[in-house]
Image 1 (cartoon, rainbow, N blue to C red):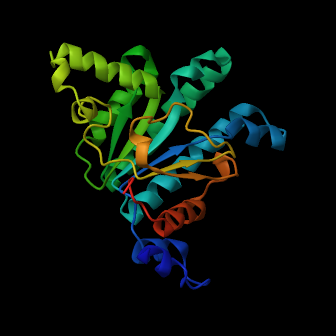
Image 2: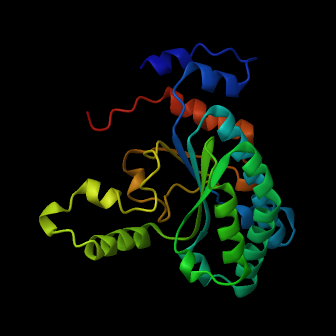
Length: 250
């Protein structure tokens, strides 16, 4: 309730990032479903590939703003396992854009101390994309300012299947399987609990993203398309988070 009372006294001329960082709680772990690239392109009469390129470009300023606010972990949904069902030309475009972005942005991430982690089945990705991802993971592994989790070839249900398989591989007896045992075997086992899940594009669903982790996360839906989601929009999401009262069932 205190956060709500503080938020209602904000001055209109004060930057949103300062209001959020100084006057309310900042989420430790933020996740984003980056939706709307294709619709963004269609409405502008440009190729869908241009929409995906604009979506990739939109990631960098959000990473920098999240780090500025002191967010510990930022998870972005880059490519789902369901996306393999799209046209092969679109999948190839997405892979090419990802490779280019990794090569271009990794030096900045190293300089900023941002560690890159992958959420998903990297072993199912072959070729230069896998090599690029592995190189980014290696070069940024010592980063301590923030963790950028790239969900690539990811599925929330597949993550739970993989956790169950690890329980079997580890020989955990049935009576010892509890929430903690499962959480320790998720892709996000060494990250803070998910506090805020943002989805752009006007849809209001989680689309198989971080199903376990979002159990008590605050949900924030933004009507605009992902390429238009700028740092000011991110600030607004954090300001809304700061206004909410989280009770966790209590």
